[in-house]
Image (cartoon, rainbow, N blue to C red; front, side):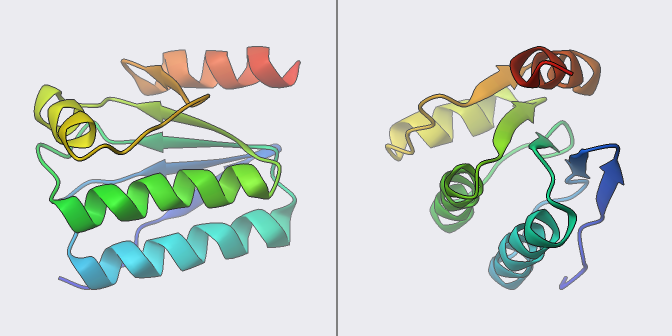
Amino acid sequence: MNTRIPILKLYNHLFVSIQWELDDQTALQFQEALLQRIYETGASGVVIDLTSVDMIDSFIAKVLGDVISMSKLMGVKVVLTGIQPAVAITLVELGIHLQDVHTALDLEKGLEILQRELGD
């Protein structure tokens, strides 16, 4: 597919809505693009919405875990929203640990968590 995933900035936060199943190359491009946008904007929070993602494979799960860990190393709070049951099962079965990562059922609740955590 090789399509870029839009990363939107709103105030001091970045929002990502993944709208399709990721291939390996797109996932790696997303990882690099998100980290670069964090650096460029000085964002303090990121919401990654996975509502449209029905399933992920082991490589994509690892990249997602890495993106979260790398973002946290850059001082950014990450909230995952819209995790489908199959995605949750895959993450747990693959041992992708998302310690200290907040999750929410939808984007609105995810933004509320981010604002509360960052004191916005």
